[in-house]
Length: 292
Ligand SMILES: NC(=O)c1ccc[n+]([C@@H]2O[C@H](COP(=O)([O-])OP(=O)(O)OC[C@H]3O[C@@H](n4cnc5c(N)ncnc54)[C@H](O)[C@@H]3O)[C@@H](O)[C@H]2O)c1
Image 1 (cartoon, rainbow, N blue to C red):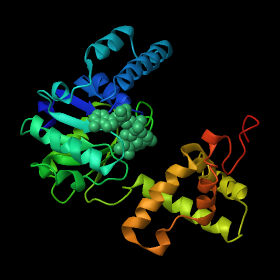
Image 2 (cartoon, rainbow, N blue to C red; image 1 turned 135 degrees about the horizontal axis):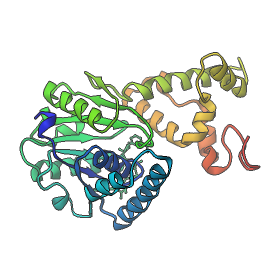
Image 3 (spheres, rainbow, N blue to C red; image 1 turned 60 degrees about the horizontal axis):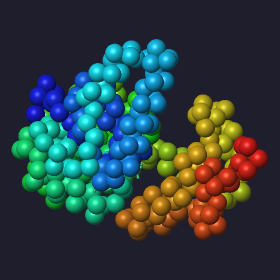
């Protein structure tokens, strides 16, 4: 199916990612149905998006009329059956649990028409694991947006061995239509590209710190000064949640069994102690007195 045939889109899951992905779709001109099992998540989505768009109008990023037109294309529902009626593309953004996603994909496969593309926004689950519960593996792929989607201009479009070139191209064209840069991965790999690069840097930083080569603050400093990164690896762990990285790492270790993939001891110690970064007021740095 080519991009010109895509008119109606459904986004399944209206959490941190889903509601903003849906907004990008309506801003791109697509009729979009946003579905969540929780009514509350949908109400919150509408409130949050209205706030964001009011800001955009204030800043001159969008006109009042374009904003109203976009909202007129956004339809919210708790019923999957209503959300996916006549859609050409589904972007799934429900919780990061394989069994939940497989159940969603299995249902979607039965509800949508034969031509419909099914994409997952998962950060860690490769699409072949979801394609296996459908009858359309050639129309299944990852479209991995970055948080927050309304700000971050990048989507990793990941093909499995069975994803067709046409499906991948349509996803890339779709990214362009919603103002996002699509990056193609022609083969599946755990963590895709951006998170693998981040992981490699963070792993090396933790090695240097744990082996006593340098203090973590100095490792952050050199990352910013010499490599021109806006934020150091330890600051980033604090920002995204030390536990988030730890559990992602643990999942990788469980999959590969490779001792090299084992989470760092210093990270494990912090997670056990509930020292999880900015959200708990303390991580690598102390935020309890209003920041480091
Ligand atoms: N948060 C991030 O930084 C980020 C970045 C990129 C990708 N992702 C991926 O996006 C997906 C969603 O993450 P999130 O952070 O938005 O999660 P979230 O927990 O904020 O939202 C998930 C939403 O899915 C809903 N949900 C659960 N089961 C459902 C079902 N069966 N049908 C419909 N809705 C259901 C929940 O009610 C919730 O509102 C995950 O796969 C995650 O890996 C997250």
